[in-house]
Amino acid sequence: MYKKIVLDNGVRVVLERMSSLRSVALGVWATVGSRYEIKGEEGYSHFIEHMMFKGTRHRTASQISNEIDALGGEMNAFTTHEATAYYVKVLDQQAGAAFDLVADLFHHSRFGARDMDKEKQIVIEEIRTVQDDPEDYIHELHAKDVLGNHPIGRPILGTPRSMQQMNRRMLLQYKGKHYRPENTIVAVAGNFSFPQLLDYVNKYFGRWHSEGAATVSAKNQSYHWPEQPSTRHSLHQKPLEQVHLCVGLKGLPVGHPDRYVAHVLNTILGGGVSSRLFQEVREKRGLAYTIYSHLSSFLDGGTLTVYAATRPTEVEAVIEQIAKETKKLCRRGVSIKELERTKTQLKGNLMLGLEGTYGRMNKLAKDELYQGRHVSLQEMVKAIDRITQDQIRQLSQKLLDQKELVVTALGPIPKKMAAKWG
Image 1: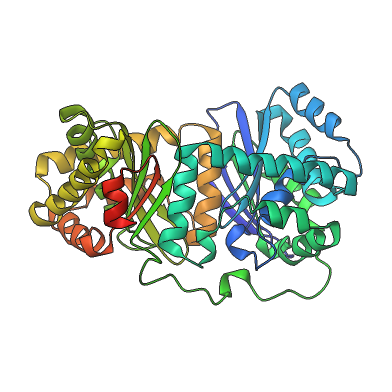
Image 2: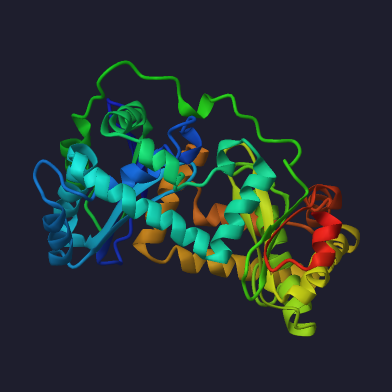
């Protein structure tokens, strides 16, 4: 059973009761992520996430860790381009204690100067860790190639420079601008009593009022999704064993009417071991151990990206095969048998992902963030079932245009390729 309530201060509360389970997942989402950072603020959203766990007015960092362990639950947080979430999963009888803990972090974190200095170094090491991991780093480089100066093209972690230049006043000013009741979603899924849970919500979030007048919504910033990528080919020499590739194409915004068609299309292209790219590139030709495609959708646009890691001698062959498979989808479309198999695969993945309280909580918050309403599982399944071969062909021709293809490569780039595209 689903329920939505908007508190008098603007906090949105989305709840789904799952009476057959014995756990509760609680998430507090601030609808601010890295895309809302202006120049000089790179990485602030993510850094706030780190600092929330470093102690509050009522608990030290070690007390926070000990308390969640004592509850027998798990607690964590994450930052995306468009949101920051703090969540906890506990047994149903511990819901009140979980609310108290998460609310204390969200409202009363201290942001101590000494803790900030230590955490800056930790985040800088995190940035270096990404740069040392080719599969992570190639996606970061590729986002810049595709999106240029658009904020989505910037790394969520920020840069060592932005971390070093940040101070407590600047960070708290950023937090005060964005962490406001009207920018907050409380999402809860699991076994609970609606009246009791609403008591918790009102107790911990109903009396919260921001200081100062509301600022212009970060969603209204004048950034436009780029019509053209900033570069077509980007080669980054690095002494690795393999060359890591990202091949980028057009995607769709998160709320686009064809979003379910795009998910089916992506699954056919590279979304699993039965996908065309996996079968053609890895299984039939042995050109790569890892190859997959994925969709990234945001408020104002999106991308479809193919990733592969291969031997230096096979780089051009892998790119050619990716181009060949995308062309084939545009020209020949998909058979009814392949389409039905893919629909079944996608529905199965969807249902399995929503069996637990964490998956449901996550979906509740994202539905509210991006759609402003609850999208039921039945509605999603029906939308997938309605997809036709013609829809796949039409969207393929729209998204898989070879003229829009962007290649980013990292590793020991062959001289021939460097001379051709460098």
